[in-house]
Image (tube, rainbow, N blue to C red; front, side):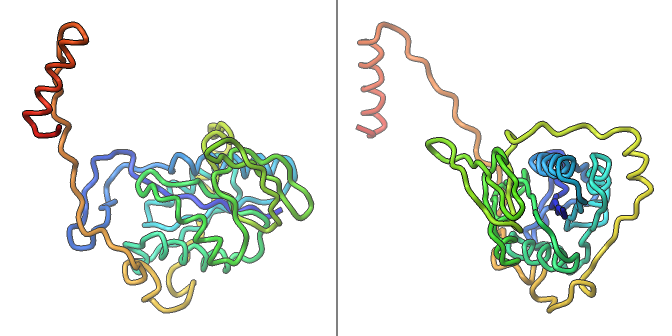
Length: 261
């Protein structure tokens, strides 16, 4: 069984700078880690491998420093890692990111599962997984909280919906995006950490993936961040003392003064 897990390296802190010209995060020199929900995607891939056998390939798009995130995934139990890295990929929105990942995955050949975290902490859109499935022409199921069954050519996955849980029968190959409730990610062992340091992280750039440069990165992104700002802190409220009738009278008077009522 061939399992591909897509991960992203994200800033550890919310104190990040924005490139005012490009509207993108400045990641150089910022402490980073594997996106939280991607850890659950890695763990689920490892559990499937432990039960059914096979190989786990972890793939990421990002700058050279994202290699560390891939090594952390290898230390958890993944078998090989690929980093899609090129200056042409910089500034990609969710559409361009999905396009780039799809091109990389097509280069890797066949697979049974692609597993992604439902969203990332820096983007918080939840769009890359579904768009990636669209680019690859495969079915997908989002918001997965449990894989109930895996058959020869299908899975039954349970997804959270507004009023409960919905069981989805989905053919293989497919893509799923997982929630944190699906499992508890394991800690990497010392043995695997040492092994991960010795493994080669294979890199692919624009020349490897092919196609027009205008489809990648900022040029291939139909959306732009035009402004980034911090919201004004909420104003301090006022506590009205007294019995309920007095509180209501004072509140009504203040609302009239503000011309709200």
